[in-house]
Image 1 (spheres, rainbow, N blue to C red):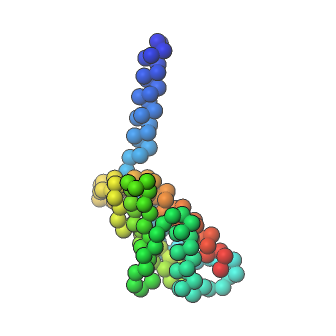
Image 2: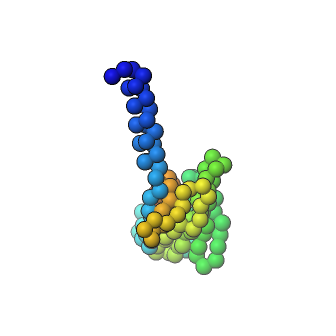
Image 3: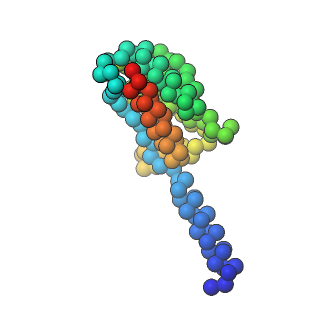
Length: 137
């Protein structure tokens, strides 16, 4: 195979793999995650809220308080992408649920909400940061 044809084939393969990797995927919500602390004590809802706010800050999410044990977590990425996740919390559990997004390939496929795979990755990173903060209580 000639070097130019080989180079074009490799380039086309890389482009197609990149496109496939970024195809919209099902949104993953994280419901009723049990609160676990290293002390074994049940924290107050206010302590849970503070742990969530601290964790969000470590991952560059901004928090907007809502009513009734809810927060809106917003992440802006490169001035182009925005995702908003609702976080419901109580002293024994919390949930992270998709709320809104901009420029994230949000849509519906086969009756299921789909989005760019980075959304799920970013929310999973937030969830892990929250888990780590809660363990400090």
